[in-house]
Each structure stands twice: as structure tokens, then as C-alpha cells.
Length: 523
Image (cartoon, rainbow, N blue to C red; front, side, top):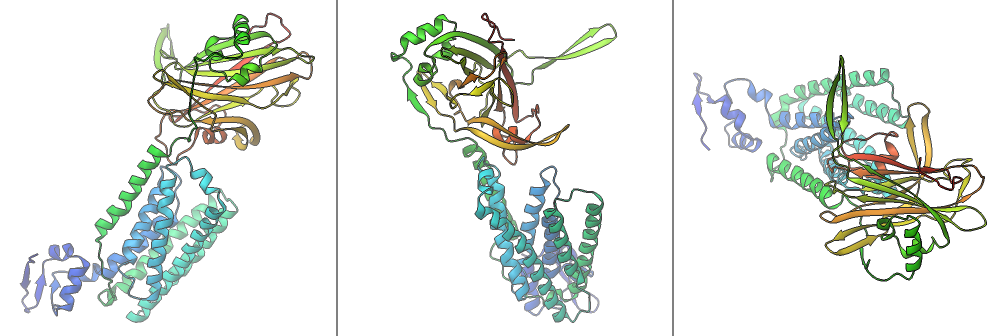
């Protein structure tokens, strides 16, 4: 590469400032080592732009971005990612200068291999389970300790450069940063949420960073004496590799790790059931045939001795609908109209014979129209016996499965999980409340047909005069565009009672009737 070099009036070689700025560290170092130290830019740009200046400014900016957390617009992920990469790019140039900087370089590599896999993990549904592992919890504490070690090593590196340059500049700014981080960790442990101390902490942080920038500027006078380590991969290429792997990992997480692994098996719906007589009897009492056809033989057999059947069916929309504006004199009324109802929920109660009144409840769902996307789904069940003094008690365990069609073949699978979950949610009126509910989590494959399923349970009467009141809350995932990734179950156990958003949509359906009414009709 040719350079525009001229001589000034004193005969000293002068390098055009534009060409000097475009040179990388290796070229500057080479020119200096080849005896061309008389080569000077036309301004004081050498004192401003040196390998030391560029490297240490990256370190300081990276330190600022990676230690201060802003919990909005994903900045708590974006800024630390940029900051950790900047620190690596900066400190790798200085790793041969002294032991402190070499230790910082090693720690920066470790932080890359800790933080970026975590960003990829956040794009999968498994991050919640992995973060709960004791080993991962221990790694989080190790990461905090590494930041302290990094700061101490950075202070040692600055101190070595200070001694080498015979500078008298005070390096207490780094010590103040260590104290600042200790205070920040303490506030995190006590879960401080006030504004006053937070503002003080932020102001102190700004002053500390300014102090470090001043120290860097003072030590910059010895910049040409800094030992710059050889660089095999350019900054641009290294950055492309790191963020390229990150993007590829996140995309793979969305595509391949966004659903539960289900145990799908072919079933023969056309074979003759050994409970054919019971099926006919149930159909005669009004049991919906579409629901009955998808029951397991065990659930059909549990309806032996059926006395009567109560059925309720409702269609629901999981789309946003369209707004309709109507004028009534001086009043404008805006309403939402749903032209498409994708989900049909059919609830069935079967009274069984016995000395004690007992019922078997079925909540059946059927996607009559494909909603376009399936990720993770969950059913939250509020059974009739939920709570205290409801007049009913539990009789046995939950049962059910999910199904879909692929051409003429039907596949069925048990729920990925069907169990009670205890969770804590914030309530606007009553504060944090701990609840325990039954949840059935599952996923459907893409590109199939006739997605459906059901969940069933039995109840016994404890006291006469109580209604049957059974609720199904179905949470459907409408999009994969979320970060970090949540499952429908996570959404239901952390969001407010009736919240719906662009990713998850909840539908509530209830089967309510008075069993003492012989001609019982759903409310």
C-alpha cells in the first residue's frame, strides 16, 4: 500500500493525517521499528491515536457496557455482549505488556465462553430448567467473582504501565470501581428497588469512568512504548465470527428447541372397541361423538354405569379480530368482531352410578381452524374441588392425551407433563400470592391436521347443594418471536391473571351447572 509522504521545511518526513488514521497497529509498529521514527503526522494525532489509546479505550468502554445493567429493550443482553467483545478486542493487544493485562485477557476469553452460550440458551425452552441446575447456579457466582478478579488484574496492569512510564497520575479510579461493584452486588443480594441510591450509584459510576478515561489519557504519553501483541485474526473478522456464531445459535434455538419432545404413536381409530355397547349407550345419552371417538379405552371404561350426560360447547377466537365503528347519534361505539373462531372447546360431565354421587368431567379442545403456528401449549385446570368448601372432592388422577391427523393416519401422545405446579404471582389487589394448580403441557408438530386433545378427572360429592364448576384455561403460543424464550406454562405462572400478548393468548372456558336439577343445563 502506498503512502503520501512528504518532507516539511526542516526536512523531517511527514505522513498525511488521513493516511495515518487509516493505518493499523501493525503498520505503525513496523514503521517505528524500521527506523522511520522521524515519520510524523501533520498534527498531534500520534499523541491522540496510539495502539495503547485504541486498546485501552475499548477496554474502558467494554467495562462500562458490561457492568451496568439496563433492563429494557433487551439492553441487559445487547450492551453486555458488545462490552465483553470490546474488552476482548482491546485487552488482547495488551496481553504481552504485563501479567495484569494477560490475566485480563484470559478472563475476557472465559467470559465470552460463559456469556454467549447463555444468550443462545435463552432462545430455547430449556433455559429455565438448565438455569435451575446446581452447577449452573455455581457458575453464576463464579462469573461474579471473575469480574472482581478482572478489576484487580486491570488495576495491576495500569499500575505496571504507570511505573513504566514514570507517571504520577492517581489510579484510585480503578479501586473506586471495585468498591462500586461491591456495593452493587450487595444491593442485588438485598433486592434493593429504590431510586435514591440507584441514582447515586449511577452518578458515582459516571465519575469513576471519567476518572479512568483521564488516567488513560495521561498514560497515553507512553503509548509507543507499550508492547503490542501480534494479532492473527483482525478485529473485524473476530467480531464477525463471535456474533455470527451467536446469531446462528439463536436461530437454531428458535427452530429446533422451541417445542416439547412428544411421544407420538400411530393409533387405529377404525378398530372395533370392546366397549362398543358402552359407546352406544353414551351416544344415546347425548355424549358428543367427536369427543367419544378420541377417548382412550380406559376413559371409556371408566364411564361404565353412566346415568346421564351434560354437555356444553363453545367456539373461541385466538386472532385479534377487526374493529367495527358504529355511530349512535353523538356517540361512537367501537367493538371488535371475530370472523374466524379457531378453537372449539367441548365440556362433558357424565354422572356415574354408585352409593355416593360421582361425576366424570371431560374438557375437550379441537382446533377446527389451524391457527398457523404451534410452539408450546398448556392447559391450566381449575377442577370443581379446587379451593375449600366446594362440596366436591377429588376421586383419582387426571387422564387424557393429545392427537393430530397426518392424511388418513391419526397420531396420539400423552401430555409432555401433567402435574400440579406451585407458583407465585403478583396480584394487583392482594400482593404476591402462592397458588397450586394442575397444568398439562404439550406441543404439536407443524404441517399436520385436526389438532385436538382432552383432559379428564372424577369427583365425589361431599355435601349436597353445590354446583359443578369446572374451568379450563387454554394458553396458546401464537408466535416464536420472544426473547428470552418462555413456554406457555412459564407465561401462565408469571403473567397477570387475564393477560394476553402478541406471543401468548389465553382462553377461558367453564362447565357450570346444578347437578340437583334432573334436566341440568349449563349456565
